[in-house]
Image (tube, rainbow over all chains, first blue to last red; front, side, top):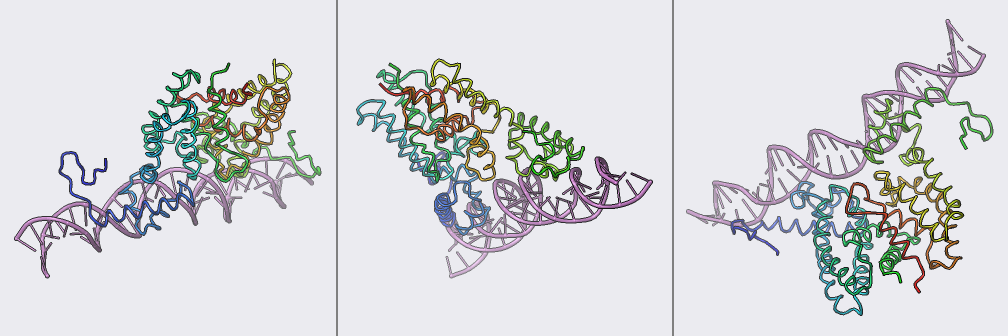
Length: 196
Length: 196
DNA sequence: CCAGTAAGCGGAGTGGCGTTCCGCTATGAC
DNA sequence: GTCATAGCGGAACGCCACTCCGCTTACTGG
């Protein structure tokens, strides 16, 4: 991880100091604006707040997806790592699944507009979609498999489908007192339980 | 229904023949393009296919929401009217609810991009959102209430929340063999059932 | 400390899209 | 046939993402 100088082949030079500084500024600016104006805030605004030109933002983050990934990487990573831990510390696999999904939902609903952009099938954000899937799908699959193995839930549900469904339910949850994504996700997870 | 000449007050003149013709063409063009290119197809394209200028489209349908509503009004109406009928012909209220939700889901998933636009909290589409809610929420509420009264489902779920949840689950269901909105909605509805 | 070099910068420019506006045209009344 | 006007079309404008290239600035070797 953290190539820094480009590990493969060993050739590449370290990045120039101003370049590193700008990248940092851009991440800070983006993080701040994502909170107040949502992840679809105009590129110009991000560049302006970071005190750089619009060209610079594209050099560091070719697509908006790249920028979003960079901003949220730590949190996604943390969520992914929480999976196995929850499986060990929870009473049952189904409980662990529920708690892990809650983490994911908490993350999504607090990121203004992220859920929309993550799910729309929008090709511009394919990289974002892929990143989330690569990182979180295996974790979800593991929890799901454990719950199935324990005989707690039905076995005909796919982890991809579940993640997409949960993501979708998180859309539009901010600033709407009448819509509580958490409650609906709970319902969905409850629906997984084997009928008896 | 069908004002035609503007019933209230009785004053207004009938619309000119070319205006009626253009409105018709626009509806046809929009309906066709919505299928192939989604409901967010560029306004210019719709105008072009209808053989009119872009100004004309705005005169007949001031916002995109108005156009979408006009295109799908019949189908939404039919869905709304199916509610009470299902309640009578189904074995239980919960079954009726499930079948009605299925109708709604079938409608949404076959309309490329409609679910996205319906839910995003996007202010441009407020009229669309409102229309769907006005028309379908009472129906949903009735079915929900009947199922609660019959003691089949939990009573802490709001019809608004349910409709939004179902709508959200329908996002991105087209052209994706790995994501079946119907199955997830089924799960959600199953989650409504009282545990026992 | 001083060139020389190229990595990196910025913002003007391009193109797509929604939306408005207004001079012109076709319609329907008389 | 004439006229008032509802209605038309598309040029024009503003907003935004994204590209491109002349200029600036950080690092390198002497």
